[in-house]
Amino acid sequence: MIISVASGKGGTGKTTVAVNLALALKDARFFDCDVEEPNAHIFLKPRLNRQEKVFIPVPEIDTAKCSFCGKCGEVCAYHALAVIKGEGGHQGEVLVFPHLCHGCGACSMLCPQGAIREVNKEIGTVESGSAGEISFVSGRLNVGEAVSPPVIRRVKEYLEPSKTAVIDAPPGTSCPVICAVKGSDFCILVTEPTPFGLHDLSLAVEVLRKMEIPFGVVINRSDIGDGKVEDYCAKENIPVLMRIPFSREIAEAYARGISLISAFPDFKGKFIEMRARIGTLLESGKAGR
Ligand code: SF4
Ligand code: SF4
Image (cartoon, rainbow, N blue to C red):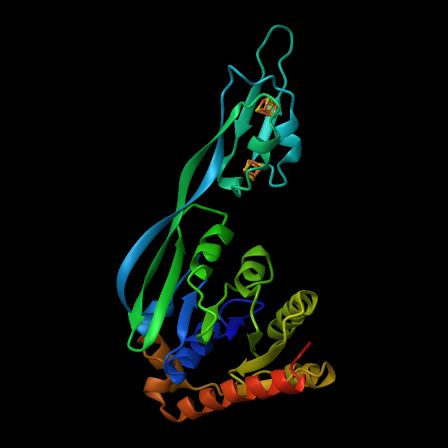
């Protein structure tokens, strides 16, 4: 089973939930897909034994063959190419913006002159190893790069259907999150009981409903703020899987890189219960949808 852990906004405790769920389930596989800011390793302290670079193919233009027809600029959905047509005896130009390129290959495929060659550009790394019984894979986008889905996809190539996988997704509701949670059997949305938390939770719920991924909610710092997240979940038939109270001791453990269940062993049972409840919700069709 693939369980992803996501949140409409950063700083809600998403990684805390993902890491502790993996620790509570003995032989889980952990995938840090929050590739712009991976930090699960701080808590899991894995032994890494493999590192590989992630590349995407970006276009390189052969101006001797190019007719400056403009087709590549028109086909690129990401505005990574701009064609300046030649005028008054001046040769045209094709501008390539490699940081915007997603490496989809459409431009080289459609160029009528065969003037586009693809060259590999390194955009990140994937590291793997183990943390005790947990196998661990983590992606990292290189500083200055803007396109994270290829790194996330590379991390997810390590998924094995036979084992429980916990995916720590990036925060937000844009392409990287969709790429990370796609194919999950269940998604845990972590939120906090504040107006911002509720706003971003409702956006994340919309995304999961469109993707038809069953989900439930964990409310972190559950005893601060107001009751509107609880009211929203009740109204929308979204199960609340766990409530983690606000506590100075929890915050201190987090700041020292100590996992919740190492600092407070009682939480282990709560995460095991949550995993069992996810199974029951899926079987009964009562997960958020
Ligand atoms: S599609 Fe090919 S020929 Fe046309 S502008 Fe782009 S590179 Fe040049
Ligand atoms: S490979 Fe795709 S994203 Fe990159 S420049 Fe070509 S069309 Fe645009």
